[in-house]
Length: 362
Image (cartoon, rainbow, N blue to C red):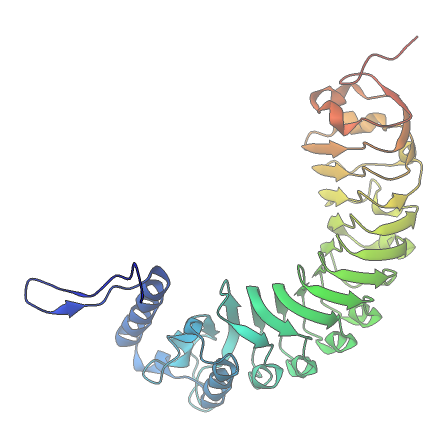
């Protein structure tokens, strides 16, 4: 016997209505919005490349026609399907069979499960952006077929159940600018092939189980701005000396097993550097020799074996909002500008003193 179930009730005209759960109500709204967009759009903008449409339907089928794809129906052109974006309408749309799909986003849905349908997605030959975000049911390895997406600029597979290696074939995606494979269960080493990508400027491989050393030429071709997150892995070895030539804006190498000198990440010439997190490693270098860029807003080097003292210039950084050097081997008087930070930012060092810590002894 089913208890506590809402039963359909007749309205004033005797018609029976069935209550919708919230997820189904949201999906119904999406379908109605898509239908409305189709109804108001000019005929030329409704064209959808037939090959792309067939590929998307194969993606839908591979996920068992999950409710995420409720708007992916025959009466709605694929360019209006939820999570799909096509290129702008052009005079060549008719010649090429319709507008091409350039973006596919599947996100925040626990009902989508199974491996990444690489063969189906690879048929979207004009795809520039591929996003799987907060899809915990996504499983298996990253399929090699994705290497055929020659136009892909942005690849995100994050917060899923994807496992296996960060495969070397990703180095074949020559147009790739951004790679986010964070919060998965990836294992093995970071492939050196990623360093060969001529446009890659942003890498996030954080929160995985990666091992081995950081490829020395990673992001060496990034151009004027580079972003790197490798935190919460099991990486070892040193911070590559080649990183001295990379124009980083943000670097997060925290919670690994890195050793040696990381001073290559600093220097007066790094005018764009905003945030550095090297915490919870085994790094060892003289902090008193570091030069901090003027735009630095966040620095965390806690839980290492860093020696020396806090440079006087650190107290003059007007943009600095977060600073943590605790659990190291630092000594000496703190710069006057450090007084505004909490005591915990400096605790468990060899002999630091001065505000916000107790005054130095004469």
